[in-house]
Image (cartoon, rainbow, N blue to C red; front, side, top):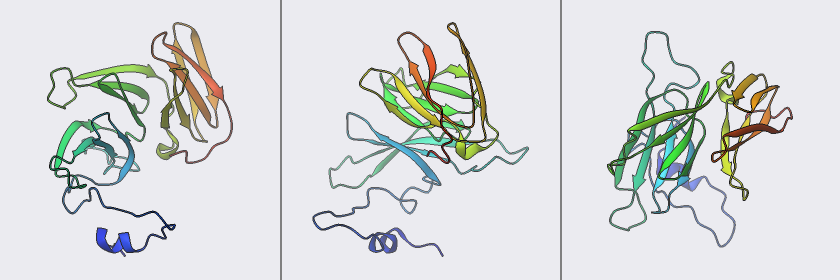
Length: 200
């Protein structure tokens, strides 16, 4: 059974003093399909990764997962504008925003996507790291967060055998880890290895 956004909203068990408000749904924005990860930028816009191809794409069918930006232009608390920041992606289940762009998972890669001309569409796509395992899509790198040390932390779930090599040497791990990546130095290491499941 699929509930409408309004019906779903009524099913939340909300603690006293809190309320749930709908910002965007697939009713107003049909491309908002299988949303997985989100972040909010300094302008208060909601960035969402969508994965209509989850859990895997069908052979012969082009992948077209997306990163969507939702904006409330009339300040009524609901999104009224959608921009496709990036499309043609494959299972972007991790995202975090920095430096006018976004670090995004795109197995077997960590990518940096950036808009360089101000139209909110990524025109720069840089592969930052390569070698993350893709065997089990919903355990792939996700749960992105920047630490107070300026490093990007990301988590990978169990069943994967990842090998990422940088100028500092290879890092190998199997059956889950939290990774640490320093954008300024390009250092990449395993922060902790533990058999996490379904980190996103």
